Image (cartoon, rainbow, N blue to C red):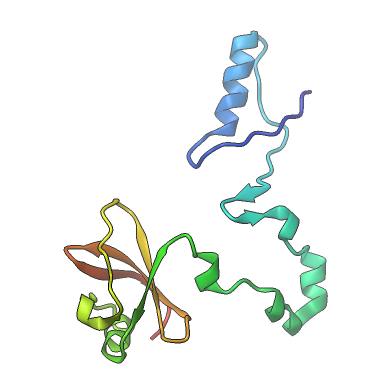
Length: 140
């Protein structure tokens, strides 16, 4: 049995790597175990063991990652009062519903964080046609 560490991008199939290595060696190959130790900005070294989480009970709140911070790799905009009403109902947001300036994204599948004036995450949206279309709404 051989142990190894693989650093790969999203969509890489580690099981397929094991199969292909076994095929190339003429002996077959499979995984005895697979453990993700890092994904984006999240590292298992920063994780809280389940027993510790259970011991903390309600005090675990201080150890949780703020959703807006957890998704900080997405662009962010802040809504006006009217924008807040619109996003609550899942309605598209135009520039007039945002504070500051929003530059529409061009990449397919890029999400935008919709924040209130306190920086709390309200929704995730897709940029289409100069508007932001909420795809996941967390308020209501």
